[in-house]
Structure formats: C-alpha cells, structure tokens
Image 1: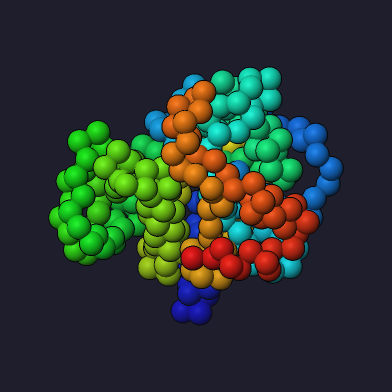
Image 2: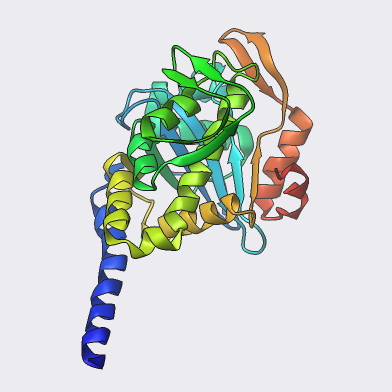
Length: 297
C-alpha cells in the first residue's frame, strides 16, 4: 500500500512539474533584445497583452514591467498604452505605436530609452487568450458600482457583484470609451482581471485538479510569445512576482502621470509626471524599491 501511495505521489509530481515544462516548449519564440544599458540589479520582465491572438503587427493593449529586486518586494508597474514617448528612430508617438512599428524589439528599446531600466525578459499574450485563461480558473468576480455598457467592447453588465466568464472579462478589460478615466481606467481593470487570474491559478484547488492544471497551462501557452532569451527560470520568477504583486506581498502601481488627455502630434495622449516617474524608474534601476510603497494600491 505504501509503495502504491508513493508511486502515485511521484506520478502526480511528474505531472505537476511536467505540464508547465511541456507548455513552455510550445510557446512561440521571437528574437530577443540586446540591451544597450549596463548591468542592473534584480530582474525586469516586460509583460505585454496584444489586442488579438498574439501575432505580430498588432497594437499593444497592456504593458507592465514586473521587477524583482535582490531584496524586497516585487514591483508590477503599468505603462499606459497612450503614453507619449520618444520612439528610437521614429520620433515622438504613443507607446503602443512602438510595437506596431517594430514588434517586441522596438517596444523594448523604446521603454529602455525612456526609463533607463534594462529588461531581462519579454512575455506577450494575445488578449483573446484572456478568454481561455478566465474560463480555465472558473471565471473572475467583479463588483460594479453602476451598470457598464460599451458597444465597442461588447459589454453590458448590471451593477453589483457578479462572476464574469471569459468573453465578459475580455469586454470588461477592453472597455474604454465609456470610462471617464479612459486609458487609466482600463489599465486598472486589466490589472484587476490579471490579478484574479493569477490568484485563481495559484489556488490549491487549481493545482491539485489535473484537468484545471492542464487547461490553465495550455491556455496560457497557446496564445503566448516569448523572446529567445526568456527561459524557464525567468518565467518562473515572473510567476512568483505576479503572485506576490496580486496577493498584497508586492507593489502594484502605474507610472505617475501629469495628464491623461493632452493634445499631441499623435492625438490625445498620456503624459508622464516627469519628476515622479524619473524617481520610480531610478528606484527600480538601482534595485531600491522600498520607496515605491507610497504608490502601492
């Protein structure tokens, strides 16, 4: 009996570890990025959500820096897609235009140029893949103070607390035109839903249920893209950092902004707060993230 139990336990551990390893092997790979910056303490990974299925040539819907310092709390820093920045070789434009112009490579170069932060890895997921991820964790719970309707986002939700399935969650994170906060409001909802997916993925019942565990890993890998320099250790670290950020053990924040609706050559844009954003970037680049606690929410 003991031998049988030990054998079953071993098989379970092999499945538990083997499933994400297999899923990793199926992820699409693109060329990596050679940073022009010097060495940096800690590890910084760019997490990107595109507006489709993860294929190149699209615009980015979500851009977040996940930073793990040598000591201290991890940081999840959101970049508004309409941020008005300098794109190397392309002049000033909205941040998500960098991806449309040159894919992950130019997007990474643009963020390094404007932040002084060196990126060690890149993970991209098509926002359409959010549907499968939400369904794999059994939906996500949200609470609305007022009804939410947006024809472009295909969303029509009642006020109150409710569980969203994958399609509803996709509309929830894409809704923008009906949000008085615009891009920043959408970013808050994107972080909310991503956080609940991460929490659901880390829940013991997801891990011990072989069907849920398999579906979750395959859903993530099926719509994900990574650079060739983003290996398993970096992805595992990113997973741990995400769990920390969304369970209160890390710092989740957005780049400080001074304006959300400034007229520029690229149209209505988000302008970063020059002094505050520089302080945030410097803290991350130096590995000293304790001072970012004041931005934690």
